[in-house]
Image (cartoon, rainbow, N blue to C red; front, side, top):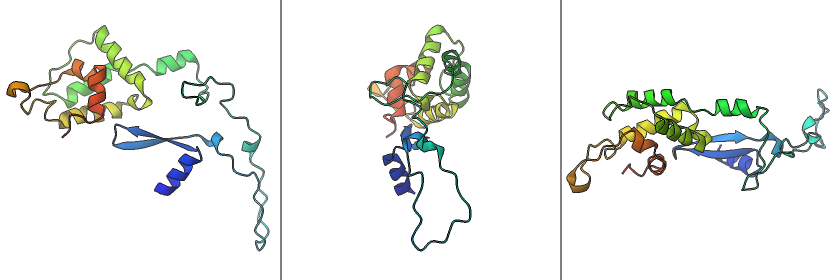
Length: 186
């Protein structure tokens, strides 16, 4: 299985993405793979039972031909979604994320008010990566916090005083990255 996935990645049919360093998800790009439209029959093969029409993929243009390229030079494939719909769908479910925090981390100070600063920080973390645009990611993220003795204040910190994080600390850009990368799990 692993060899097949590697081959598909090399053929640019799949793109692997890491999720919180613990799992991998794949994006399928069938337009980048162009097998031969007709395979010659083996010399000792019987006649095919049915005629297969030629694949339309050989004549189809690449969907990203007229699309802008990002800084890495990769083509952005069109999604068929308008800009206003994309912006609306890219809005972070702030209230649901706050509810998850309060539900999964009752030992930490509860979030009672959701102000502009908190909304903007959550929205920024949400927009940083497609991986973050999933409530399951946030459930896993808060689970990582719950599993960390240091973040939960179960062990002594500087001067043997325990550190205990809060919601604002977790959604701050540098702290968020450190938690996602597992820096607080020894």
